[in-house]
Length: 200
Image 1: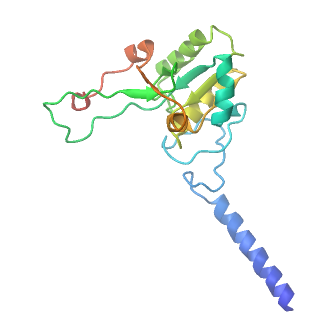
Image 2 (image 1 turned 45 degrees about the vertical axis):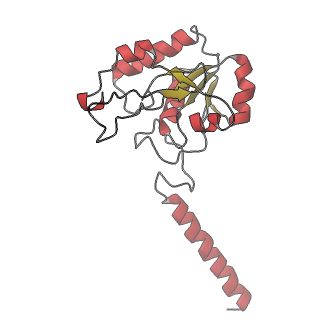
Image 3 (image 1 turned 60 degrees about the vertical axis):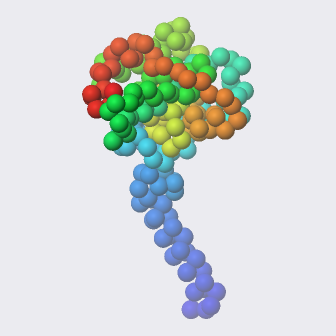
């Protein structure tokens, strides 16, 4: 075997090893995270797929441009949890900052989602879009969050034709824009069980 043949063989072996590693990469790996066939049912936090079939993935410039169309902004970020050891004699008054005008549906990107909550999710989106499935809807939460990916996927599967996913999330927005304090959507809050006493 000539030196050139040995070099070619080493390169081929290295490429094969790299492809094997990429194929075997865990779901939270930044190397080739594939889209699941349906909803993502693993942990909500972790490296996400870079695409969402049937939807448009937005960067900040894309979201800025879309804002002129007054899209429905769906924030599905989880609510803050009361820290362990928080003094019992002090009030726990968390506030949630988001993109101004967003509708906050905490944990609406969970999978599986209770059937009643899933029905409410679709009912709220239908109300917010006025029943127009061509109206732009943007889903987001935090960076590296499958929750907003799942929310977008649910809408695509339901027949919404202008679904946008903003994976940079709230932190990406606040890099160059102001945020606003938003409250949980009243209908969503009414259907959610109260938090355990330790979290209040």
